[in-house]
Image 1 (cartoon, protein in one colour):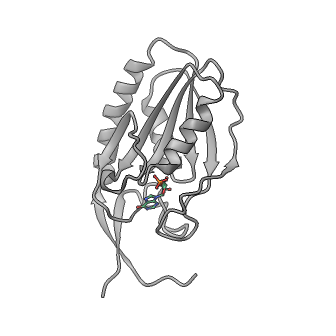
Image 2: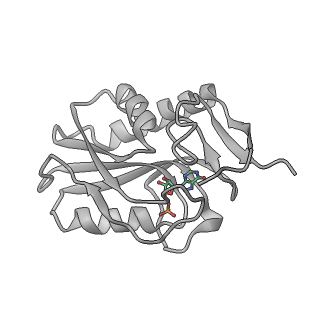
Length: 179
Ligand code: IMP
């Protein structure tokens, strides 16, 4: 697919992200302080930077696992179909699970993942999303913890891509197409 030229405007700085993660991690640690059975599940690939920073602020015994589901391909719109591309290694029955998502947009991905993981009988199933675009929601769902609510903009950086690029930006930026 040929890309139209675009620019990226910084929306959330690396410093603001780090401060927010520190605060979220202490809330999460309080919720899970009574458990040594926590599995932190990152949804690939967009959450890989977020989960890396989050678990390092989470001073609890945790296991880390990953689940990959299909999302947008190279487009900017959700296909609304979600398929498991890479399943968890861990069995989560009877365990506490924290699902880590990069962005909740229409909500299809997170609600599908939660339905799937529920069938495996976890003890507690909680969710955290770095970003939330509430105005885009088509499925009624909200993460238990959210980093930042953002407007309906296409964003990249801090693990999040546009056509597989820009995941390595240390900040969150919005994609803009100059006229
Ligand atoms: P949902 O199923 O529509 O909620 O979409 C969730 C997934 O779409 C996220 O995990 C992202 O991978 C992707 N996504 C949603 N919004 C954006 C965006 O602004 N930039 C890049 N990816 C996005």
